[in-house]
Length: 119
Image 1 (spheres, one colour):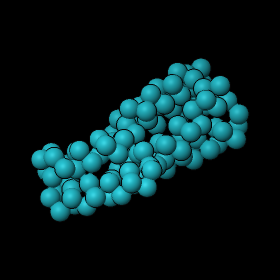
Image 2 (cartoon, helix red, strand yellow; image 1 turned 135 degrees about the horizontal axis):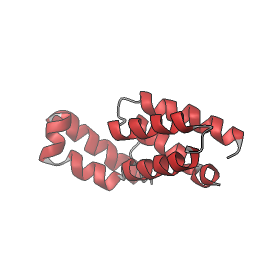
Image 3 (spheres, helix red, strand yellow; image 1 turned 60 degrees about the vertical axis):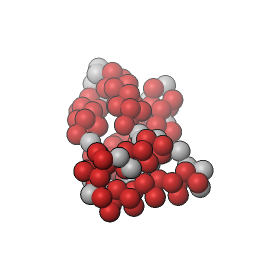
């Protein structure tokens, strides 16, 4: 993996783990990847991190549906759930595909470099 790509990924992975919206499984995968850098497990953990990020990156249709559900109201609170759903609809109308929360934004940036990370 190119050192510039690796440096970019390290910076973004650290941003990911600091994001309030990052789930624990992504934080764990990110830490395992950081711990594996420079070892024989680096590529294995790179593939695992990418798989986790692909799973966690929230499509807007999923976000909107969740925010509009009873579960969404329980997680966000009724008022905030409505705001999240409205924001998701605005993003979708603007041609976006994924949630723009801090964790999703960083995950998307990392995934844009997927081929370079795996190459």
